[in-house]
Length: 304
Length: 227
Image 1 (cartoon, chains in turn red, yellow):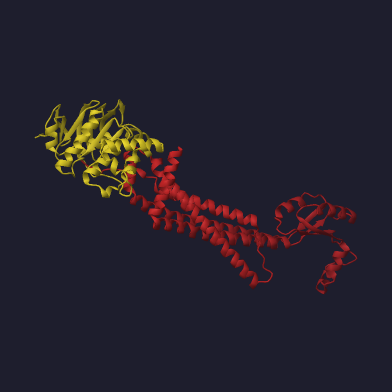
Image 2 (spheres, each protein chain N blue to C red):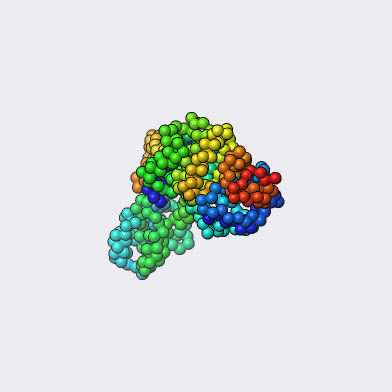
């Protein structure tokens, strides 16, 4: 594409955006509103997921060591595991301590009835690990599995599976909603571009008569779509983040322990995603409407 | 230059718009295409700029078969053609100069080339003093002259024109016709469909008469009559 062409596309797009102000407004608002809704769903999902991870990390991982493992070996292992990035701290619980904990509860007296007594202690040495906040559990569990001294471990599997399921469901739901909203706004953008295409039919006919290629005719429309997508997404990001900030403020007033769990980096990534989605919506809406450009460019009706 | 070989066009509704037409138009010719309404004149012209394709037969322009030309090549064919239609087809929101420049913009010409060529084309049609005006501020004859300027701004080899004087009074029609003669005198082939028998009879150029899709007359210095 030559510089002259690009210059022409830009000036044409700017002129057309100005001339068909209402159409441009409709397209930009459609993209903006769709992105605000998509962004809101994504934000809610990200917050929920982050919250779930936090809850998940608060669960202790308990590793049961093999019966032959001595206390000193257990302490050595605990020192080694402390160096893992996922571990906040480790406590070695000897069988005696475990038994004391067990029999301190009067309800557990029934254990004695089935032959388990403080003297005949079948409990293994255990390591109680507190996991750092925000840790994704599966990689840590993999590391623990490979430790030869560890017999087995528990980490609240059921709860963890539920969290995983809920998190997965959230993502699937938000993905479906984002796709549906994307398609709906694409349809509206397609129709508004189609309308402007009819309005500018004469111009297209003349362009084609004087030898414009299809891509040359599409050029200004694509630039318009790009600008509309850019403006729409920019507005959406401002509105969404301002509302989020406001909502966070209100929530922390209502719920004293509530803190924002999404960091700047994640917010920036979300903004970048929304911006890209805006561009894709604007450009693909234009491209879709222009796919049969030859239908618009017949200078004279067919006939004798 | 232009060669039609057994060109037939049958529309989907069964109407035979052109029926086995074979002829040659040489470079620099001035050809009138006459005939009653519905004879196939417009279809004939539409074929020349690949707005339509024949059902049978071939059309060669400068030795190239344009009937089998891929759609993507059609714009490059049209850049060598000037097209002037009856309804002036000017962009009302653009100035005279911008309308004329359109033909150069689509080929990616630079601003300086556009300025020079637009000025030359407007001088040729006698409208350089109205370059900043809008089409709605011009008379019918002036609007048609702007269309002609747009058609010749690329120095086309062939000028195809369909009823260019159809909406104009006799005096203005003569002026427009004079313009076409001047353009033709510089070597551009002109193919013009018209109902203006006075002009055809006066100018005594080659006349092709089409009736019911068939060439019924092909005279070198012909008159309008085709019955």
